[in-house]
Structure formats: structure tokens, C-alpha cells
Length: 199
Image 1 (spheres, one colour):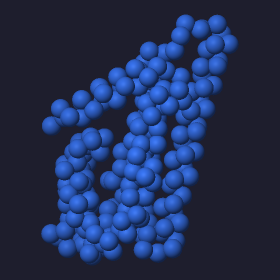
Image 2: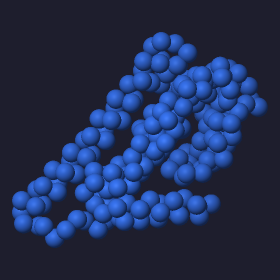
Image 3: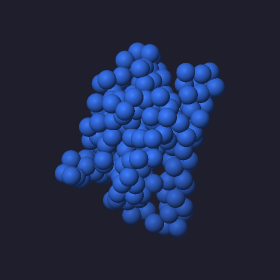
Image 4: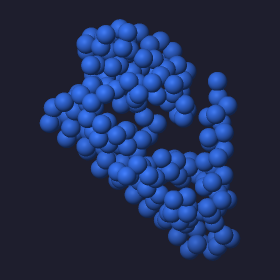
């Protein structure tokens, strides 16, 4: 069975383009599920429903990968979950079809990119801290996460291993970013609170 998923946000309120593309790909109209919510929100009820409906041998159909995931790491983890469950992924506008060997190989490359992105952010963060120390700014660790640190903290916290458990502890994330554990906890708690109260 083909099951389609679409998402619209404040920047893209009209779902017609996605709906038309999904039905052209063979998804029955009643199997197209639409979330009207920002992709950064943790709660996406229709997406959660789609994950419940999908069975082994089914294909999840979307127009673009950014309809699915909050981050590259989230996409990689989702891809791993779909593979483990025997579910295929078809991305109509980006030529990804995991029913084919080429599609599986292309999707697999995203894990490489995600790891590379994480290493770059960590390296840049460490370089910045070293440069600050070299200039005599040794007044302790920063109290707040910069944007790129915050992004990495969320991606590392969301990353799940093959055993279904988190790959990183909060302490490990804090060590990677050069901040206190309470700083990471505070950021994650504040972000989740904002997502929970969003309409």
C-alpha cells in the first residue's frame, strides 16, 4: 500500500501541490494525510498516525524530505526505523525510491552527511573555545548555547541507536559542546515546553 504524507507551515499554507504530487505517484486520496503545523514542532498527529498505519511492504510517499524531518539526524533515524520495519520510502521530487538499489544507496548517504555535519559543528565549537582561551577569556564555560550548539544539542539528543535507545547522554552532549549539563537540560526543557504549548 502507498501512504502519503504532506505538511504545510506558515510559509506554505496551500497543500494542493503536495496533494496533487502524491496522488500522481499513485497514492489513493483517502491515504493522503496532512499536518498543518511547523516541522519544528515535536507533535505532528497525522505523521504519528501514518507511522502507525504503515506495515511491512508498504511505501511512505512524500514530495520532499523536508516534509518528514526536523533535521538530518532525525531523517537518518527515521530512515533506519523504516528499513527495520520493512517499509519503503518514495520522495517524488528528489528521486529517492528505496524500493530500488539506487534509492537505498542514495538514502544511505544521508547518514554520512549527518555525521559529517555533527563533526563540523563540534570542531568549530572547540576551535572557538580554544581561540577564546588563547585570548585570555577563561571566565568559564558559556552560560547559553549558540544557535549551532543548540541545533547540535537537539540532534544529538534525538539520535537513537539500533537498540532503540538514545546514543548520547546529556553529559556527553554537554562535554562535546563545552557547556555544563544543566545548560543542555535547560535548553531541551525550554524547547519542549514551547513545542507543547504551541497551537
